[in-house]
Length: 431
Image 1 (cartoon, helix red, strand yellow):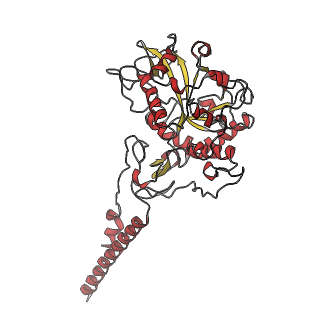
Image 2: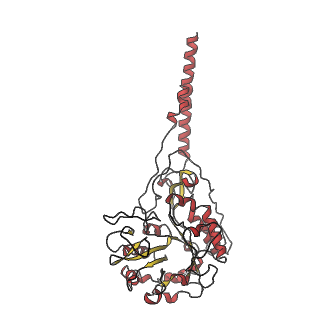
C-alpha cells in the first residue's frame, strides 16, 4: 500500500512538472507572438536585435542608468526645415558633433600606436545621414599637408593623427561633406574649425580642392550686428549651404573664412559646460546674453569622454542644462547642440531635446513632431510621448557599438536569446 502511494506521488510530481513546463512554453510563445519585432518596435520597446526597431532607431541600452536590457533608442534627428521651412537660419536648432573626426576604430597610422581620446562612433558620412548638421574639426599642419588631429600644444604628432588613408586625410573628410551636400541639395552644413594651420592659404585651398567652394556662404553676407541670417530657402536657392568658421581671427581677411566668435556665442566646453546650474561663456566668446551675434553654440560634453557614460549624460542632465543656458543667453535657444557619442541615450537623448527646442521656437509646441506647417503659432498636433522607463525582457544583454538597422555603418547585434528556465533548480525539485 505504501509503495503504491509513493508511486502515485512520484507520478503526480512528474505530471505537475510536465504541466508547468507546458505552461511556461505556452506563455513564452504567446509573449514572442505578441511582442514587436521585424522593424515594428518603437522607442523604449524591448528589442533583441537592431532589425526589431523601426526606422531611425537602434537596439541599445544604458547600464550607466541601470538599464542593461536592450530597448529601441533614437538614432536619427528630425530635420526641422522638413516640417517648418522658410525661416531665417538662426531660428533653428541643429545637432553638432564634438570632434566629429575622432572616431572609435578609425584606422591607425601604419606602425604607430595612437594615444588619444575618442568622441564619436561612426563616420562623418553616417553622422550627416543621421541628421547631424554641424561638425567640429581640429585641423593642423602635418607631414606637409593638413590633417584632422586631436592633439595638444598646437602640434599634431603621428600618434594623435586620425587618418582615413595615408594621404590628405583632412581633404577626404571634407569630400564626405561634399558628397553629402551634392546628394542632398536642400541641406545646410556648418563646420567649426579649431585652427592650427599656419600654411598660407592652407584652409581656403583645402576647401577649394575638396570641391566645397561652390557651397560656400560668403563672409560678406553674414550678419555682423546680431541681425537675422538669410532664410534657409534663400540659402538653398543661392547654394550657400556650407558655413565655415575658424578660431583664427586674421583668416577672415586673409582667406575669407569667418572668425567664429564674431558671429557665434559659445558656452564653456568640457567639465565647466556640464556643471549643473551654471552656463558660463567661453573666454573667447562674448557674453551669452550679448545681442551682437545671432548664433549660439551650446557645448555639452565632459573634458574626458567616456563612451559608456554618454547615455547618462544625454538624459535628464542635458535637458536641465539646455534650460540653464537658455536663461544665461537671455532667453535665446541654442542653434547648435554639440555633444560626444551623439547616438547614446536612455531612449530619446539629444534627439528629443532638439525636437523640444525646435518645437518651442518654431511653433510653440513641446516637440517639432507636433508642429503643423502653415498653422498658427501654438496649434499643435496631439503627440503621444513614450514613458521614460522601458520594459525589460530576458533576451540577453546588449553588446557592441551603437548602430541601427537603417544606418550606413556596420550593424552590431545584441546577444541572442538565452532560455534559462530549463535549468531552474525548482524544476528538479518537482521531479
